Image 1 (tube, rainbow, N blue to C red):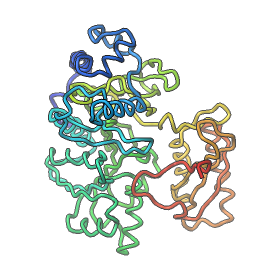
Image 2 (image 1 turned 60 degrees about the horizontal axis):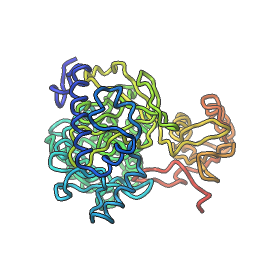
Image 3 (image 1 turned 90 degrees about the vertical axis):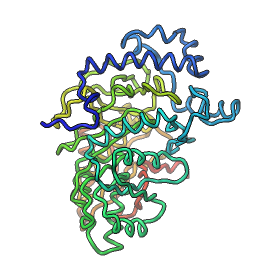
Image 4 (image 1 turned 60 degrees about the vertical axis):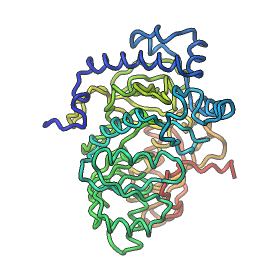
Amino acid sequence: MKTELWNEGMELLSHTAAEEIRIERLKKQLRHCYENSDYYRRKFDEIGARPQDIKTWEDFHRLPILMTKEEERASQQESLERLGHPFGMHLCVPPEKIIVAKTTGGTTGAPTFSYSFTQHDLQRWNEGLARGYWVAGLRPGDRVLFCFPLCGGWVGSQLNTVLSYMGILSLDMGVELGMERIIEFTKWIRPNVLMATPSFAEAFIEKYQELTGKDIRELGIEKLLLTGEAGVGIPSIREKIERAYGGRWADYMAVCSEAFSGSCLTEEYQGLHDVAMDLSIYSDDLVDPETKAPLEVKDGAIGEGVITSLDREGLPLIKYALGDIIQIFTRRCPCGYPGPGNRFKVIGRFEDRVIIDRVTVYPMAIRDVVTSFYPRVKGAMRIVLAEPPPHVKPPLRIRVEYGPGVQGHQLDELERAIREKIFGMYRVQCVLEFLSPESLGRMTKKTPLFERIYEK
């Protein structure tokens, strides 16, 4: 395989060499946080440790969790009340050094300013994400239709800054502009890449056909970088979208502005390549999602990924447990990517787990089973919750859109097949309610997997 990487100097390092760089940067990062942040100094004092105590990876892994999403929000509220800025007590530089202020989407609570950068940190962000974009297939000269929500200070509008850094044209069209306007501009620019959520990509297929009477394949979109929700790892959904566009779908991620990663373009989804061992720690630091006890990182291991920034000035995240459950792969990927980092797949969010008769299952796993019956199902579904999760009384209620052409007398057999497959894989009893196509509506942002009737 011919080596072609964004940063060969870092991505061709041996694992041992990368770890040597990483441990030195970790020591420096911990000192920086302790000396410049009230939050981290208080946290280290509470556990009776000092940055100079962390000399090896074993020392680092033994550190407890120092931040959660709730603690990050509380830190922001404290800094707003005490210091008059919203960046949090974990800020390690004067607030005037922050030149980019972007937040998370706020889908699970108040937005956090995790994606806020100093000049140095902005360069670091561009470098890390560019490596992930490169693995996912982006190249200078590409033309990107960028369709994430761009309103306010959400990070969606920050993801595209990396494209100009890479020498790539980006047509930024916030989904709130509406499909008619997006289609109009798309015909002018003729992009060969779509960057959006899988929900938008699916809705775009149907809306383009409705508004133009033509197949979306005519746009010539060859590359699909879709992220923000499940899809690429579900064969039926990936096949549907790739067939409609005539392109290849890759995923990428930068969790809370860290864990820079991108998926390769192998026929079968292999997960996300951790492309920046020198910039952050994520797939090498797993904990039990219940107890937060450290887990051994080995091929196939499943746990909650823990984020730690490296070489970050402004808002570094140290031992940050975000709640994503991931599976680690340490063996070499069939694509031949030579980087020293692991691969990982996102299984679900810990807060989204459902426990039925002492069995824990994630909604993404249920969706995987349901969508495997495409085209007899459309792919749209909701898990109906009559009480707050995680504990749910059996059977699990699922609403599913059946596919075009499926007759009423065929639904009983379809329900039996889906129920048996879910039970065979997860030992969970379920009952299905079938709905006609489009009954659940279409989202251009993230599509919810739950219908919480207890809130109505």
